[in-house]
Image (cartoon, rainbow, N blue to C red):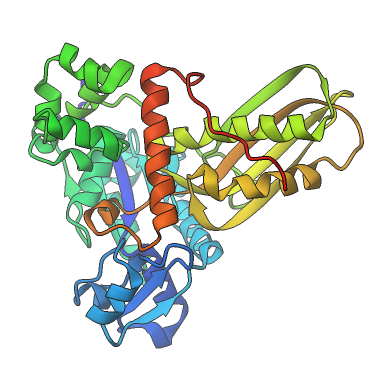
Amino acid sequence: MRPRSLATVVHFDADSFFASIEQAADRRLRHRPLAVAGPRRSVVLSASAEARAYGLRPGLPLARARRICPPLTVLPPHFDLYEQFSDQILCLCEERTPLVEEASAGAAWLDLQGTSTLLGPPLGVAEEIRRITAEWLRVPLSFGLATNKLVARVAARLHKPHAPRTIPPGQEAAFLAPLPLRALPGLSRESVEMLSTAGVKRIGHLAQAPLDGLQLLLGKNALLWQRRAQGLDGSPVGAVHARADARSAEPTWREAVEFAEDAWETAKLHAVLRQLLESLMPRLREEGIAVRRLTLGLRYTDREENEYSLTLAEPTNLEADLYVHLPGLLRSAWHRRVRLRALWLRASRPHTPDPQLSLFAPPPSPRREKEERLAAALDHLKKHFGATKITRGCPHAA
């Protein structure tokens, strides 16, 4: 796969996105150390520049953050507000090119190929969007400019904050080679640990490792990850078309089942929903994504369809956080007493956890840490031995 002749793919990634928006929305919070912290995990989700000066980073336990920074102001997350600001950034990008793809709240790709005659060089366009966002929304952006999405994303995140970086065509592999494996987007922590144990500690090592050896560690995805480590990524920047509302074109992940015979038994439907959820969540974890919205869709025997959505207080990619919501979703969506022909679950409103999370101590919640380890172990077993070889138990209703 040959690189493009020009670097035209830009990845924007907002700096301290949640904290920056809280300061933009409330003047009283500006120039003060501020942290946004999730109530469930009790860890810092985002820290303002003033808080970072004390050493605060995403993933730091909140109790420790308060000790490090006594004047710290802590706010709960307001995800709807963050998504509104993210939509404004997307609109700025869409004014320059139709090839825009949201990665998560506060992060997006755009492809400026073919726009130079009208808009000028891609670097100038990226700098202009960065300047307007800082002046208009008061949200600082970092960006990476490269020949493909993967390299642009790594470049945007490498030296945040306020760190634009351009990777010239042909320099992708050399740019990635000295970076640690955890900098490679989508590579799970478990895979990083296995590769590191085998002596593959940097992206350049992965790019040059014997493929047969990598297959023992990464299975059927070994070639894919080696090509990514070499800076090769052929995935196009997705076009965002006119939206009926601000979120209608957002990325989604979907799992569906069609019944051989029309279904109506509640216990059976609950079991099927659990199976769909257990197929959906590993895909999110593989991509390093957490989501805030879960949608259940139904198709009745008369072919009529309807959906019902649940918006979560915090993003998640753990089945354990969502099992409790499945019965209520089914009751809300199944408003006709007609048998069902098909079900589907769709996850949306993605958020990408800060890549620095894994550098700090785990959150002080033994239950959640246990669930994360369990999910990683099940993902590993299913990847290597097949999705049907192991399943979660289903507790009986009380």
